[in-house]
Length: 580
Ligand code: VG1
Ligand code: CO
Image 1 (cartoon, helix red, strand yellow):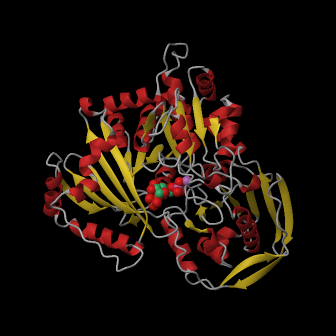
Image 2 (spheres, rainbow, N blue to C red):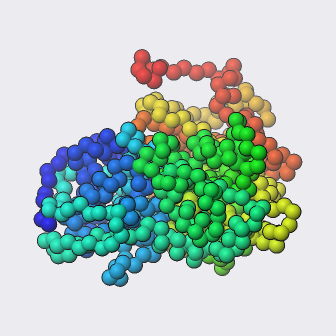
C-alpha cells in the first residue's frame, strides 16, 4: 500500500468526555469525522510511540463498528503502526481489551501498546443512536486527561490525516494473521478469538471449581442478562462452558448491532426482563425467582447484581466485595493493597476500609483515575455508584469479574452448606453487611437530555448557593426539621497522589453534619444536550433503622420535597425555546 495524505478541516465538539468521544452515528458518519479524531489521537501520542506499535482495535459490536475498524486499520498502517490486533468480528468487551493489552502475546512475541475501543457503552446503538471511540494506554487503562486534552486540542487545528491507499479491507470474521507490505515494511492484522485471553485471566483470579460446585447445587439458580451487548460473547464461554450453568440461565446473550433496540444499561429501569425474572418491579408475577441475577451494559464493563427479589446498590456491592475478597477470591488471598471509590459513590466502602485498616482513596468520576493508584500498587478493589466495579487485574471496570466475585462470595459463604436446607442468599449477605458496618441509603436521579445552557446555569446557581449555607439550611429546615445541618459545601477537586495532577470542578457537594450528602454533576457520557445527575446519600448506624426502603429513607432530601415547600419558590424562563 501507499500512504496518502488527505486534507481536512476541524469539527467542533470532538472533546472526549468521561470515557471517550460519544456522538450519534450520523455525526460519526460525516466524511473525515472519525478520521480527524483518530489522527488527532496518533498526533497526541507522538510519532515515536505510534511507529512500530502494536494496537488493539475492537469494541462492543455496535452499529458502525465494522466500517470504523477498517478505517482505523488503514490509518494505523499509514501512520507506521506495525500490527493491529482485532477480536473476531470486531468484538472485545472493554475489560477484555484491557486484559488483551496487558496479557496477550502475539505470534511473534509482540505485546500491545494501546487500543482504540469502539463503544458508547451503555448508550443505545443503531443507525439513529450512538457510536463512540476511546483510546487506552499501555497499562490497559483509559488515556489520562493530559492525553485526552491533547487529542482535543489537535482536533481543533487538524489539517490532514494519513490513510493507506491500496490496502484491501481485512476479513475480521476469520481468525488468522494477514500481512501486507507498506512503504516502511511489513504491516500485520491479527484477528483472534475474543474470549480466550479474558477467560484465561478470570481462571487465574477465581477458584472456578468452588463456583462450579455452587452452580451445580439444585438450590442455586442463576440468570444473566447481557442486554444484547458484547458480554454475551463471554457469558456463554464462562458461565455455561466453564462453570456449568444451564444454557437457559442466559438472557439476551447474542450480541447485536442495535442491542435489540434496547438501552444496554444494567439498572432497574432498563434491564426490565431480568428485573421481572428476579421477582422485582411493579408488574412482576414471577413465582420462583433465581437466587442470583446479574446484567451487563453494552461493552460489559458495568454490572448489576440482584438477589431473589432483592437489589444490591453498586455502592454496597463494592464495599461487600472488598470486605469479603481476601477469604473468597484466591487473587486477593495475600490481602488488599487499598480500596477506592468515585466521589459520588456512597461511603459504604469507607467504613469497610476503616474497619479493615485499608488504604482508601476518593477519586473523580470515571475509571481513568483508579489506574494511577493501581499502577503504583496502592489499590486492589474499586468501584463507582454507576454499576462499575473492578480490581487491579486490569485497568477498566469489569462486569463479568464482578459477577464472578459475587459468585465466589456466595460459594464461600455456602461452602459447607450446599446440602443444607437453605442457602445463604445475596440478601442475607447484604443485610449481614449492613448490620456490621451500618447502611448507606443511596439513590441517584438522572435528568436526561435537558437543555445544555439551562443545565450550566443551574450548576452555576448551585455553586453560588454554596456561599450562603444559612439560606440552604433554612430551605431544608422548612421542609423537614429532622434532617441534620449542611455544614460544608464545595466543588470536588482531586489531586492525584501519584503524579500530582489536579482535576477541578468534579461535582458540587453539599455535606451534612451526619455524613449525608447531596451531590450534583453534569454527565460526561451523553451525546446530545445535557444530563444532570443528583446523588443522595444518608448514613444509618442504628441497626433498627437499616431495613427501610431507600426511597422512603431518603425522601427528606429529595427535590420533590424541596419544591413542595411553601418556602421554596422557583422561576424558570424557557425564552419560548424548546426547553418549555
Ligand atoms: C458515567 C458514570 C461514570 C462512569 C462513566 C463511564 O459517567 O457516571 O461513573 O465511569 O459513565 O461508564 P457520566 O459522566 O455520564 O456521569 V461506561 O460503562 O459508559 O464506559
Ligand atoms: Co460501559
